[in-house]
Image (cartoon, rainbow, N blue to C red; front, side, top):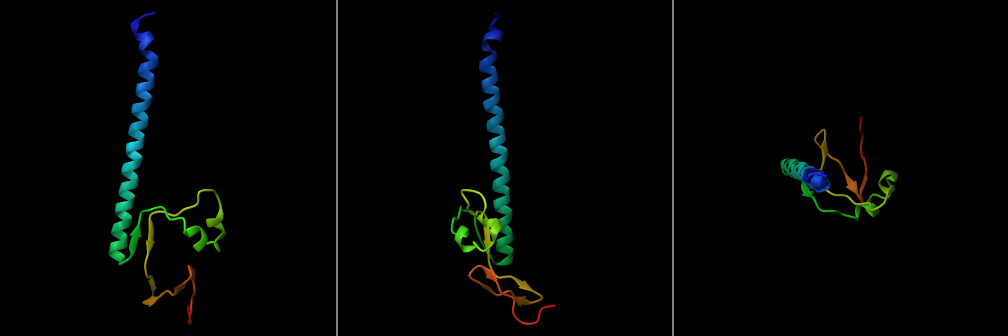
Length: 104
């Protein structure tokens, strides 16, 4: 066997590691870009943006069945703030939306 055949497994492993590292970097950049965009939206709306993992959402929004599925449940990249519709603030209590008054 020639040198090329003996080195082939090493070359394939190195190439695989380089591809994995490139994919990891692209994912990191995409996540960073998303966080920056969400932070900009939050600033524009006068809201708060928190990129950290928050496990309290599991209990806070337990009344939504969709949030009770899966394992290792946590929220991240969350936006919090006041929301107005037709110039009226939407009341919010205990994580639940309460509509009051006459709504169309």
